[in-house]
Image 1: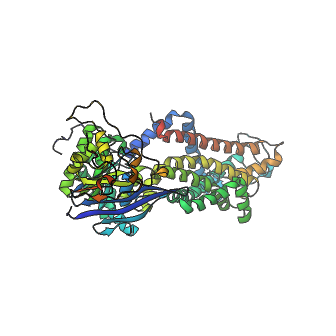
Image 2: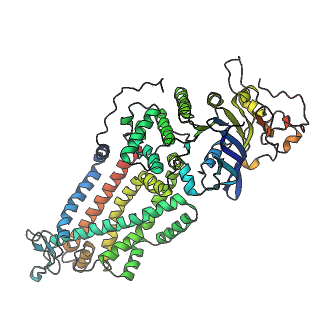
Image 3: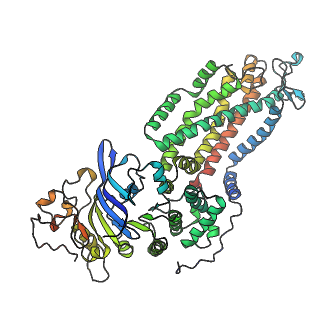
Amino acid sequence: MSEEMILDIEDLRTSFFVDSNEVKAVDGVTFQVPKGKTLGIVGESGSGKSISALSVLRLIESPGEIIGGSIKYKGEDLTKVKNSRMRQIRGNEISMIFQEPMTSLNPTFTIGQQLRESYKIHEGLGKKEGTKRAIEMLELVGIPSPEKRVDQYPFELSGGMRQRVMIAMALACKPELLIADEPTTALDVTIQAQILELIKELQEEIGMSVVMITHDLGVVAETCDYVAVMYAGKVVEFADVYTLFENPKHPYTVGLLNSLPRHDKSQDELIPIKGNVPAPNEMPSGCRFAPRCPFASDICNTLPELEDQGDGNEVRCWIYTDQWDGDKEVQVNAK
Amino acid sequence: MSNIQPSQVPVRKPANRRLDNFKDFYKKLRKNKAALVGLYVLVFLFFVSIFGALDANYNILGVNSNATNLTDKLLGPSAQYWFGTDHLGRDIFYRILHGMYITLGVGFAATFMAALVGVPIGLLAGYYGGWLDTVIMRLMDVLLAFPGILLALAIVSVLGGSTINVTVAIAIGALPQFARIVRGSTLTTRKLEYIDAIRALGAKDGKIIFQHILPNIMSPIIVNTTLFIATAILSAAGLSFLGLGVQPPTPEWGAMLNDGRNYMYQAAHITFFPGMMIVIVVLAFNLFGDGLRDALDPKAKK
């Protein structure tokens, strides 16, 4: 990848300190987002996707803390900037859409009041001008009769409508980077398709980059240019979307793909990944995935590095290194 | 979005949303008859109390409520003296009328003072947490360790008895109650996603606390305020009864109770009428407060 990177995260570590125990939610995550492109972050619950995203905006709350690494946004390290600068960036340059459209709008304010907030904070617009812009924004995200909707309260809108409002809020100041934290999980499939389509259209229109956090590989295939697969606080595979789906390398990625139904092949049953994500306090010291990996061998008790495979694919697995002492002919490919 | 046609479904014109909300609220309150009675009694008493507040020279409706008339002392209720007279021959009806604004005033003032300080304290403690929360809430616990009336008693005996000192004393005693309720509500509200969302838009802490959290926790504050006014009135009357509150000859109801204490066997009406009024006012506030709580509870929405 030789494009200009809008976001370059290097060895990010975010931990939660509970009862003098350290829970490493994000443990040395590295990824880049090229300008104007979409990066998907996939992984199951608790793999650190959301925490990574919240870390970018420094929205991690006590007892959580960013304890290491760097988050470079256009060369500026967000882990080091002042709070006041961070507030300028939030909503204006980097925006976020949250998972739950039902609870992400303040029930005591009208849609218009909440949309105006962005303009008030970042551009100092008054009520009249703000309302005008809010209506434009609602129109842009495809809400019918926006001039009436601005005066309505969140409870008067459906889930899909609220998510559109959320997107309108996030995009109000035309950010350069949008972080979408499972934007479609709470919505049904038709609305999901509309919302994803909408994000894509707006992305082209504004020319922003997107970080799409999801556990739905279908969403990834549809919207992303690059994918980072996360497992237990670490990136295990990073590739462009075609490589990932055609030639997945990490056993975990393969497992994820195998556990999806496919409509181009007839399948009698899906192949699940056995076991569960280990609890944070009993995380294996070596490869995090080793206890569930069908190919695990002795060397997996030490942690492999994320290594470039030369074909635009970075994998954190011993199988693809010279040190691999197990069966050389391991067939990891998806069935 | 070419594939989504704007729908032509007419959206109800939001003519006056605040008025609509108030109508909704009144409709719910109206179902609770007791609360409605409480509200009407309070509104009535509030207007009556204006007469007393208007004239500082004890003249009320052309009658000097502080005029002594020793020939007419200790008379029972009659057409001339509706509530009878006290040991100095003062007309109890007019004294009660006159004292109304003091009683209501102390109740309201003490409660609002407590809310004005307690609410921000609770918001800060709940929002920031950590050491600030610990320090503030332990201080509140210390205040809470004393029974309200005892604390007020101590403060008044230090500051001296006057209407203002009584108000301040009661307000201080009420601080922890407000701080705790607000802190609790803040704790639950700040974890909600819309607070994260507004922070992700770059809002400052002050804006988040006062513009986004506060409106969401208004209901418990309003209900607590209404209910506490009743308690404040009782405490004020109690302090005056003990001679530590509002000083005679100001016709404060608690002080009037104390006046009549010595004549209980000859002229029970001297204590009965002020006592009755305290009961009515406190009951009205409690009934209204309960109704308010039900009407403001979104879960009870019909």
